[in-house]
Length: 329
Ligand SMILES: NC(=O)c1ccc[n+]([C@@H]2O[C@H](COP(=O)([O-])OP(=O)(O)OC[C@H]3O[C@@H](n4cnc5c(N)ncnc54)[C@H](O)[C@@H]3O)[C@@H](O)[C@H]2O)c1
Ligand SMILES: O=C(O)CC[C@@H](O)C(=O)O
Image 1 (cartoon, protein in one colour):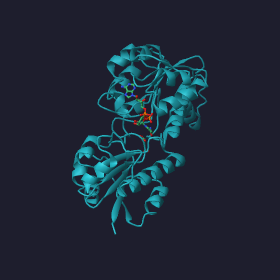
Image 2 (image 1 turned 90 degrees about the vertical axis):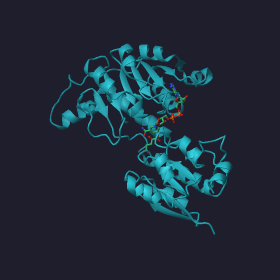
Image 3 (image 1 turned 180 degrees about the horizontal axis):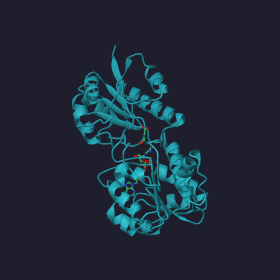
Image 4 (image 1 turned 120 degrees about the vertical axis):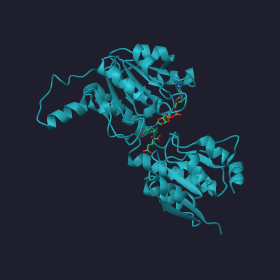
């Protein structure tokens, strides 16, 4: 009888382990994927590895994993997995594309509201005994223009929610259809128009070679000075030094960030600015999202190891799950 090792390299919901152990041929092992030597050693025996966003599965990790058949990302973003290298190695990559999108969208909305009304700053001041009412005057959302950069799953959920606040929502996404945008009450615009018009801007792009640094010097030169930016997608999409300069010089009014170019991030010049609200990559951190992400990733692992079709496989169609697994065995 086959024996498979499924390596859990980031903290996943216990429901993920429960799903994996439904199959008696699967042995679950754990490793701290941020401990690189430990990860590389543990990968030597692994047939499957399950990660969130902290563990990097790159060419070096794949080379250390001769038995690997599937990498499962318990979440959306795949910037920590080298998908082309996995495909070359005959390793299937899957994610859980809808598992945490509601949590991520709700967190972006929370950041937007916190930013508009200075909630964290006022909360901090009052807890220190300062009744700072005039210092923390906010702005209304109603009637303001929200720019949504990336009208995919999360961007669309945020657009729908913010339209209910009577915001005028425009979006830039070269792959979104007019029909989809119209159904959300959103107007599709070019990137320059979005940057010119937005009073709030929320980023919902994947981090790729095309989106890295997309919001940098040029973008911050053309935006309105009352712009408030929310980024709950990926840190590298915004150039942090350029954002800092724009905030410091009053070319941008505020920013709320959940994600950073390098994580964990505990020491950033941005943290010194009073018009910056920050959270430590919490977008997907709800029990609801984690249970869905963990169980969906685990089910995909079981499907892959059993040679069944894997609906959430990302390195297809050139490498169908069957072909990828056949070449890996
Ligand atoms: N903070 C968190 O915890 C958290 C949680 C989930 C997802 N995320 C991040 O959010 C990202 C978006 O997630 P999603 O589920 O909405 O993904 P998605 O694939 O559904 O949507 C991304 C959208 O971006 C568009 N896009 C791609 N390149 C673009 C470009 N250059 N300009 C404009 N639009 C472009 C795509 O057409 C797509 O519609 C993920 O890739 C992930 O990195 C973060
Ligand atoms: O694993 C996490 O908690 C973050 C996941 C999130 O950034 C994603 O891309 O799905």
